[in-house]
Amino acid sequence: PLGEDSVKWTVWLTKDALWERFHTISHIANQDGEHLEGTRKKVYDILNNGTDVETNEKEEVAMHGQTVFGWTTAIPGAPLRNGG
Image 1: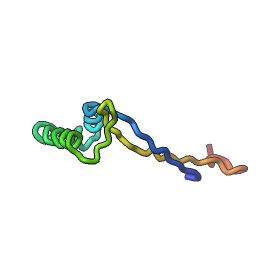
Image 2: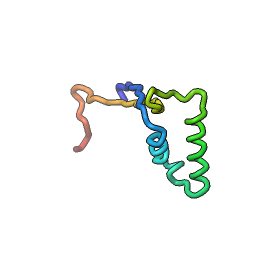
Image 3: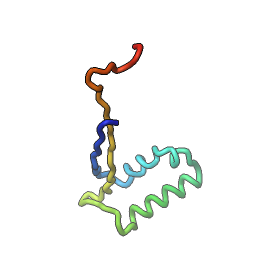
Image 4: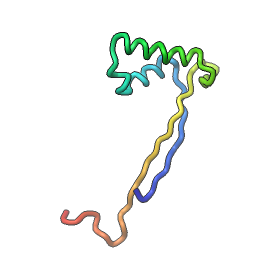
């Protein structure tokens, strides 16, 4: 890309909403039975007992992320495509 940038963001989610979001990640979504239940228990154990879990007054958990994006632009005087 000729240009790129990023935006950092934070969204506050309930523990259940955060689990539902994690559960859409293919590595977790493809689990089933005892394996899925074990993963769910680990996530909730961390959310409930982790020393560095960031929460607000509503007991929602902070989920931080970063969106990276890039773009290109046409070079002045040059065709965008050859032959079409």
